[in-house]
Length: 451
Image 1: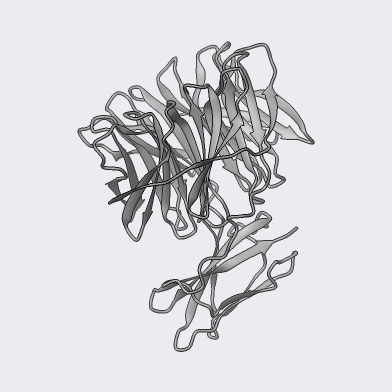
Image 2: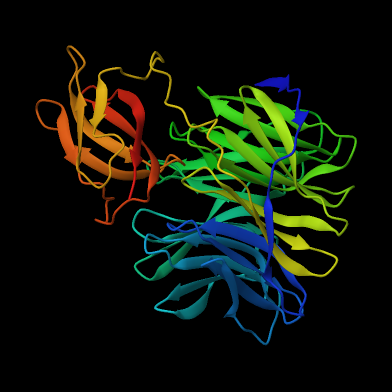
């Protein structure tokens, strides 16, 4: 494991700021943001005044807020939001009145909600993803046992399991992603030893690793992203120094660095996203200045930008999403007027590059035409002497497999621009890889889909 220091540069960038929910109630805690295929933002969050789960969506530049679960109890803490292939929202959250993990889904314009895991006090720090079969998957903390848990719904039935049941107090600040094979990957905090942790389930077994083994108390407020090579990226808070940190695993080895070594207490409520080249972008809270900040890695150096540095207390409970065009979207809490806030910035084209053509797992003979595709079928071909492709896989910008196609005897295939469910993939950047007859993998250039 290696440690390195970066030299961040502070800069300014134009961000547009809007209020997503202007109701008089106290809203905007525990926000989670997602962006639909049209580039419109959706936000889940907690209504503290009524103890309810709320959801806001933007369409035509106008925000609409509604209740996802209107309860007589106290529900809606620790929300996490994901959209399925149809653009319908799925939300995981905590029922504080009963100490349960809950799940809500909107379909056909109607919200439904249900318990997921109920024994003991479970459901803190939830994180949700939708798998390739359209099934919701949730990571969360079991406060009764100090364990990390994972639940998946399949065939209408929820199954919960312990992902890390060590004797230590583990599982706070969970963040869930699915890799290109659909395997669950989770970052979380080991409160006993003060480490950020990472675990992945493959072949029915969970394998855990320490992300940052420094002697400091690090690993709070983790956020996880998986790139198109299935490398995990984690943002987190260093409580010892009050700094924002970032770690990445490559070739099986974790490296980590301080992103913002400010004299202020920075790095709480982190959210991480990746651009089209797999470069990290991180949102986080400055607890000293009460501002929302944004860090991006450009040409090997970190740039630090204020998103909302108004005189009010802004930036807590933040969440980040990067859309297919490279535009960052933020949700967060305004602690002075108690509103749910939204911000977005300009597209960032600096990071949108192809994988290196001379890397050890790339192939100059892997081609796709036409590229960009404007709705036409894409012909994919591997022309590598002495090697044959048995399959080609299309990945999204987060490294999740969208489609697997069997190759012909001549190592060719035609892709119709659809995923495994037969639905058109989202416009934007996608990645191609070839699976060879000996099991080797060849990474190719990006495929751009324009609609």
